[in-house]
Length: 222
Image 1 (cartoon, rainbow, N blue to C red):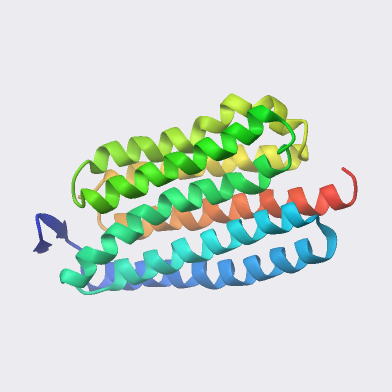
Image 2 (tube, rainbow, N blue to C red; image 1 turned 90 degrees about the vertical axis):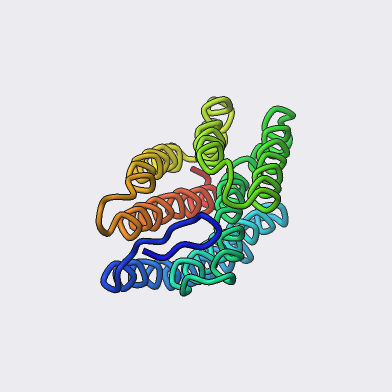
């Protein structure tokens, strides 16, 4: 078991290989998916929707790339440094995932305020992770979950502006993320990190499907 600044990493070679495979698959799919989404938005969508597609695509790829680097990096001061970016990137991914849906209702003050609020919470979370590394980890998990499920507050107006298929996929992805947290905190389970990241990749894929469905069906006048 390796430890640095009070943080322990207890993964053997096979666990790291499994985690690397999960991350590699997720990152490749994210790169392809983001490229397709941005191209589609460039052809069919408004400038606002295109900006939202860029924010979401960059947030998705950036989060998985940082996670890949952090989790595969040998235990060292650099890994400790990357840990801050990895945990901060989760806040970015949550806010970036909300952006394409809330952007659809930018003319509604409630949805506009929600979009601003979700990014402000992301900034608070990033400051928490960067200013107090290794501390308040459980509080950060609660913040992740609170941000992720805060969408129920605006589910009504959002559902009126996006396809029903997207709403269903959003909920399914949220449930998968939440279930994955069980394995994230179950540190004594072998391969728990790979399993947790497997849930992340699958949930991210479901949410990507929700975003793409939103763009494609909106273009055809759902």
